[in-house]
Image (tube, rainbow, N blue to C red; front, side):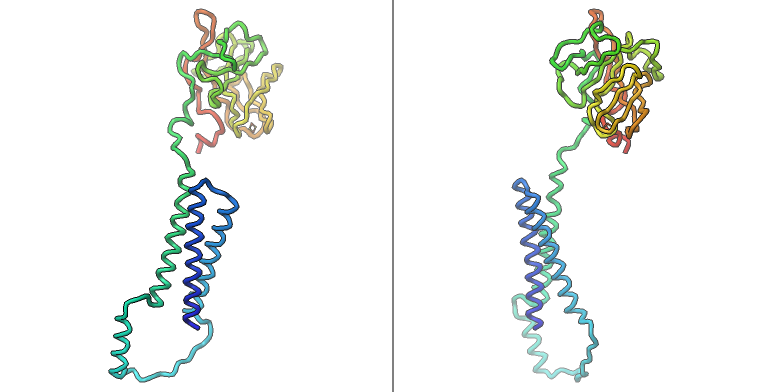
Length: 276
Ligand code: FES
């Protein structure tokens, strides 16, 4: 009976090991969420059953009385025990510890694999965009933007030259009445002629902030209705966004085109990327 139970425990741990290795193989070959879930479930279920059976073996849970026997073993018995211990092969204890060890190692290997899913380190990509000092401002079709072509109350989506379509570098460019602007300290010359530019990536969850209400001078995010005050450093005035849109410093060149004088005032995108 005991032998049967121990074999059952070892079999459970074996099932755990096989399921965990199967999980690792499936993951390595591109993954299949349903199959991975099933294999993980089997691995943990078999491990749980094995541990319970093992615990029951050592903790019977009922009172046991064993008649005391003479402490002295006859010499013949001693010799028999010694010779048994000397027999090479798999003892019960060794079988159980090996199967449990195999199960734990296989589970460890399967658990280590998802590290690969973390991908490459982001490096500076979360705090730096394609905008550089003297980057020329271009439209979505790559045409260089002239300062005089943006009408009062108008909005244009622009990019740095050579990086059209790069998500973290998209910018909304507007023209407002210069006297209405309340520039933040150090940004007094960032909006020449009332041309002001902010990141188009919402600081709440990253949606494009593409709606401009010229009368109230508010940029609106259609995803969760955050509103940003264009005149006041794109400070959020409504909705879930907690951080202002990063501003892009602009200058008008001698030939009347627009260029950036540096990168954004802050990292682009959801605030949790850089406030945590
Ligand atoms: S993503 Fe803009 S308000 Fe939520």
